[in-house]
Length: 85
Image (cartoon, rainbow, N blue to C red; front, top):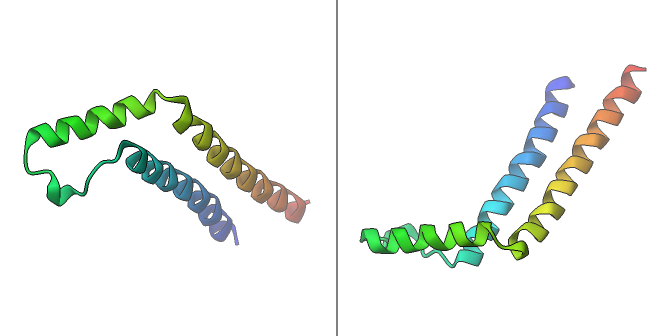
């Protein structure tokens, strides 16, 4: 039971990280890796990612995702606490 609950919390945070990474790639309009033949394309893609990390538009949605993961973690903690007590 404990392992299942730990996996649930880890899964919630993993989903949050993957979702944030996908959103960052979409906002930066980074093309697929097979189109990155030259260093110039890689460098410009990395510059766009770096630029979006400084923008409030990215962090507004990232805050919502982190709050949701915290909520799931808190619910799991309260569930375990209730089961133990």
